[in-house]
Amino acid sequence: MIWLALLCALIAFALFGLSMDDHHNRRLGTRPTQVRKRRMRGVAWGMLVMALPLSAGSHGWVFGPILWLGLIMVSAGLVFLYLNFAVAPAKKG
Amino acid sequence: MSKSFRQSQSFLHTWSGLVLGWLLFFIFAAGTIAFWREGLNRWMRPELPRVEQPEVVLAGAQRFLQGKAPDAKSWFITMPSDRLPGAQIFWQPQPKEGEKPRRRRGRDTQALIGASGDAVTARDTRGGEFFYRFHFDLHYVPVIWARWLVGLAAMMMLVAILSGIVTHKKIFKDFFTLRRGKGQRSWLDGHNATAVLALPFHLMITYTGLVTLMAMLMPWAIVANYAERDRFYDAVFAEPEAVERANQPAPLVNLVGVVRDAEKRLGGPIGYIDISEPGDSSARITLSRSGTSMLSARVPSLVYDGASGRMLWQSPEPGGATVTAGAMVGLHAGRFADAGLRWIYFLCGVAGSVMVASGMVLWVVKRREKLPDPARPHFGFRLVERSNVGILAGFPLGTACMFWANRLLPVGMQDRAQWEVHTLFLAIAFSIIYACVRRPAQAWVALLGATGALLCALPVYNMVGTPSGLFAMIAQGDYVMAGADLTVFVFGLAFGAVALRVSRYRPAEKRKRAARSVPATAMPALEPAE
Image 1 (spheres, each protein chain N blue to C red):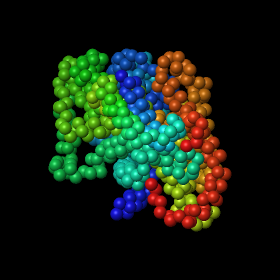
Image 2 (cartoon, rainbow over the protein chains, first blue to last red):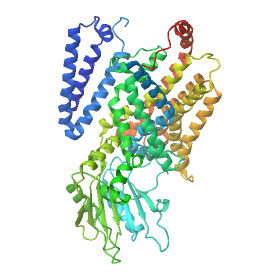
Image 3 (cartoon, rainbow over the protein chains, first blue to last red):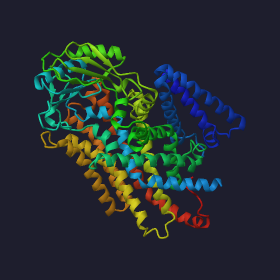
Image 4 (tube, helix red, strand yellow):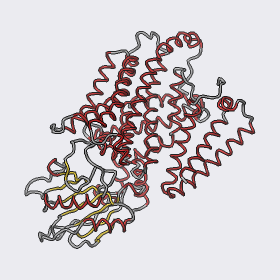
């Protein structure tokens, strides 16, 4: 369950990251429309919220929320590193 | 209006961060290492095998103490587990008439019981305990001074974090932005990224860190509510009444059985065992639950009769305030964290250390571009620039040197544990001197490079010079030891990589400065840190 929670948080931050003009342009080749941005962020928030009961399911309601915050930080960090350091499909950002 | 508010916050952020910044870096970095306190305690005693059966060790500890100090005033046993090098035991002899009881634990009243249940002699080291104590007691400084300094630094940190959120208002908008290879911009993005990615951690750790010192920093609530200070401590740390020694010999019950019963009643593993008047009919056994199994750092405890093994007393259900404070301290220390969560704590701590360090560097980078005469900077600039090199690069170098001292100092050496610690500070002193005599660009590369090389070489030495080399430990499934080796190696690589980057960076910077000098003067110099 902890892996599911991590997956949710990762997807959430991937969506947050990609909903930014620069990263969207670099990774997907287009600029996102306002609607698309809003939709991506909506799903991302949903994913983050979903990760909380999953964390609690794995570690209980005392340690679960701590784990949840930890997973959020880890996945934000991983997405940050990926978006900035992994080679993007050839196009300058 | 809002602009001037942001500027005031920017000023606050810059100076609250700078003034105690180096101390803050020590505290943050040492605290981060201290998340591996127990792991380091084992890793710095590589000759000791892992504890497989805690009960065998506990029984051995009781046997040893009965032979060594049968009529001591008290015994103290750290409950062994596979995370610890063994059972650390202390005993306190009966106080002699007219002699003040010794508060410090002398070398002759402590021992370490190893995995086999017998007393072992390992190299004399403070292990991970050093980083834990240094993190709030510093070193070479009277403890009370140190705690006030640390408390002050932590308050500055809180101010710096909060004003930083206002100052760098774009951190949330630019959440995933890192502009690489662009001088000041890159430093700023790096500073922001390490800050914002682990922001919940930074806020939590700083705030709860202050909570651990609250009784000292803000004693007024206690003064106002308790006429005598001792009454407060009695209320917070409840204890059963002390018993007089009866002077009637009575054998102590088997501790293993008592521990089993206590673990069942408390619902979690036992951390510490305290036995008063062992071997007397008035003997009392106090067992406290281990902090590894619960959030609150204020652990409950049970008292048993030492002669009969009956439970006599149970610590009262803690009140709301106690639980709150206990949970905050627990959150700070993270003793409950399993391997995964502990890694998150550690990585967040690394991010925090990088945040402090990059903030200090940023102070220099920002001002360098505005220097009237870059060849002859003013004193304050030079002071910060050189101190940055000496301290920010010196502490990692010192830690690497300390690890090597732990491996290389002769086992029979007098005050060996102390000299390990001296090595760390000698290395920092050397770094500061070195930073004063060399150009910063050179000094950064040399010190960081040396740190990288020393750290990378450690696991190699461990394979040759100790019985707990990397591959042997992986084969045994001992991931604490193997993980420590791998982590040290990865950090070595990272320091090497940073050194390499710094050494390559110089020419690019010069070119940029020349290109920028025109617009820099033309632009209004109004760009607070952002």
